[in-house]
Image (cartoon, rainbow, N blue to C red; front, side):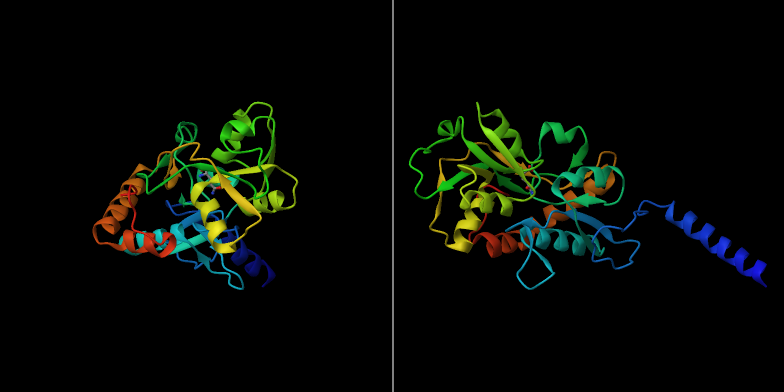
Length: 267
Ligand code: GLN
């Protein structure tokens, strides 16, 4: 009897190992996921600490934001469920490469460096970096004034890269853009360098009169959905779905919901 049981266990384990190893969707789901157990589901990675693109609202676990609405609409268009995994921003590309997720949507700017590691969808949002300082700071009025200053940025981002190019700047790398704001408010840094829509949303949402924006955009960047380098087939399907959303007005609707206006140059 014991022997038969052991055999059964061995057979089941063998089967599980086999099924885990085959098919395109063979991804492990050991991330904090809203796992549906749906083998066909699109496994999406995001760093849900980047309002208004991806975040968990107060008192709610639900992932919300522009990117979240876009990817759910893309999933609907493609006829697949979407399973969101919350991953550190600098862990998204490794998660794509290891096959733990199928796509990453996380306000991720398309850069030449990242293009060597992943495939990007067509651009779906135009962005760029801006700085913020304390409201009573009269020394910093432009990017040139950031020379030699203490700047908080989010680790692994274009903001972090740009800050490191500023002469003599002391760059403090935080885990999230939310943490950069806390660092500024605490007076531990002179400025933060984040994506413009994230800084703008922070100002509007928090009506925070202790901080202010400075200067124009330092860079022009476009967000893309990232995929494993060789996953060009899925990239084409995603591009098609985004195009449909632009044509049928859903993209504009979602844009208006989060930014209050129709897109001007994001089409
Ligand atoms: N757009 C920036 C980048 O791609 C920041 C993204 C983010 O923090 N989610 O690096």
